[in-house]
Length: 81
Image (tube, one colour):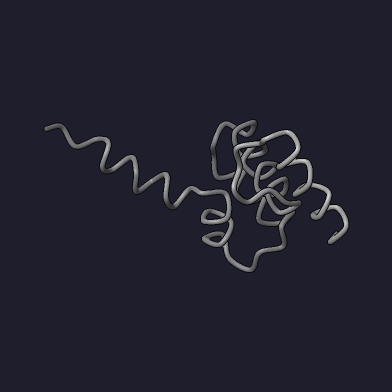
């Protein structure tokens, strides 16, 4: 895994990929978000990911794929000035 992460860092620089943290972990999170989106952003998708990622709590999976922050952002975006 470390070897792959080192290669990814080299590629990030070589190909000027504008991602700060680029690693196998990035792919894992992207996979999670992809599964959630293909399951129509529903609870079934979260439960499936929870099993795949082997998280002990569903909330961990929500945070892992960025749903907690997304929910917070939606609250602020819904405020009309």
